[in-house]
Image (cartoon, rainbow, N blue to C red; front, side, top):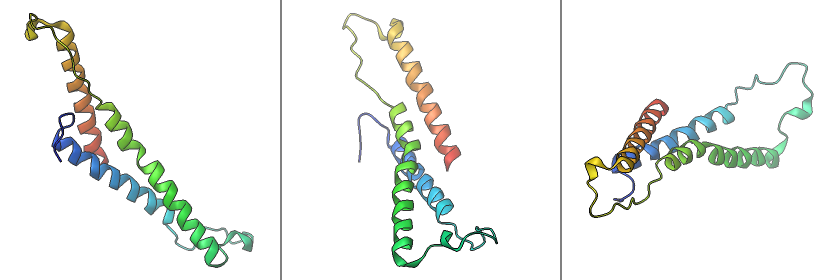
Length: 120
């Protein structure tokens, strides 16, 4: 879907960042090798029955989605753009405010692209 505010490449990079963060966090939380409890641990520390197992799955799923979306939300917020009004008689090349805004946007885009590449 095309957008005036966000380039297609950035949209395409933010989506896998969402998925990778969520999948990595889920893999970390769902990892269960069977040897995570100490040998002298209390028996009540292990999940007992289907209700506790289901509760654990739901809790991990909710936590994974909420925490996993944070990096992408921060990156998307960093790409916030507004329309900039410039008077008709102003020359764009000589307008300091326009050049400053353009440099800021380019720096933000560079930061977003590098962070997405590092996350993938």
